[in-house]
Image 1 (cartoon, rainbow, N blue to C red):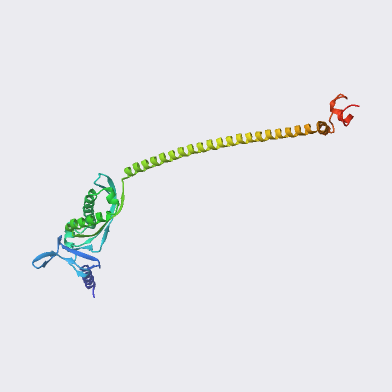
Image 2: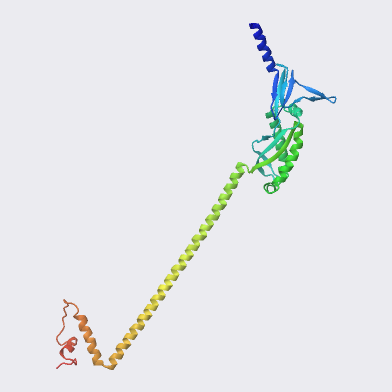
Length: 298
């Protein structure tokens, strides 16, 4: 085979490969020729040709293939602001499960089956439906058990409004509901101020109670000390009175013996120290029992 024959073989092989395309499982394809979508005649009506999964042929360099994902897809956009029936703003984060139902309508409505265009249009419709549902409800109804009802109503409305895009909405879910940042900050500041005021009040009440308790304890201590001192003085007075009575009784029974005993006690206390010095007159009454047992001089 000459060089020319080899060139012909390579060209034929390349042409054959470029005339074949594969549609994977979970996909569909739309074929356009010279910028126009190929259509089939079905019961006298022209219907866009939707290529199913498998191996297919096309005209090289003339036919253009657009692959479309036929599986369920997730649209998880950014959180958006909605207004409730009370005119309160909420930041709502939601997501949508969707898939292509009418490939012809989807291809035409999204400018050639461009997924970004489809998601932008679908997101707009979903937000409009959610905005309607949120506008019919209060915050209490939204955050309570009626959220399921809201999602069901939004799904029904979105399914109907997405038909003109050739899209089937499988599910609509609200992930999170928050207040706007500026509103949240003001609420947190108000809550913090209220908590601080409550804490300050509790501290003041505690300080007041501590002062009352301390004053009560001090008063009780003062009263008890005064009562103890009063009882001590009473007991001491009674003791002194009893001692005086005993001394008086002893003196009345034997005055001389009592005087002698008191003198001995005086001698004992006076001469207890070794270095004691006493200056007394010899005829002092202090020494009268040293001179005579009877205490009388000779």
